[in-house]
Image (cartoon, rainbow over all chains, first blue to last red; front, side, top):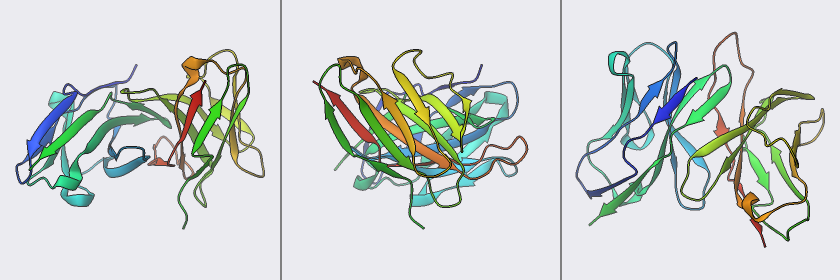
Length: 111
Length: 117
């Protein structure tokens, strides 16, 4: 069965500092991988996705993620965080039309 | 192109009442998915539908919950005889036609926040 683990429940980062959110997955084949962001009281917005090809994918809002098959990871990064990046971030694995979400990482941005 | 629409955005019900949540997918999308998000938890898959068909309902509770996606109109998630534990945010997502074994991106609506008193 597929599963997604986001080891960090909560991360605090200073504005302007770099950010990395971890995501590990378990799946028999190469899955389709996604990162979504959710602001308070809002739905989920797609940041980026990986289906195949280049393992470093660029997304919106300056985010990028790297797929590492050997580590079963798909970590999300941003070089310089803005206050508006404070939100909850979800990693998801998709296969055969079905998505499995991680529990989310809450990001707090301090001045 | 309008995004995924959900209504109502907020719904309050008393225990024992019925809750009906509606979802209109993005134009051109024929696949609809429902998820439930409990406080401080991630999204849990409930059901996957195409027009007039339930494809995967492995995440649906066995009782009181049902979903449909009729030929015309929005998808409906129906919860009968609601209990306090049903209080959650319910999100709908849609995707275009899935080709072969690919899994296309799911686009999410803003959610319906159900509160059961």
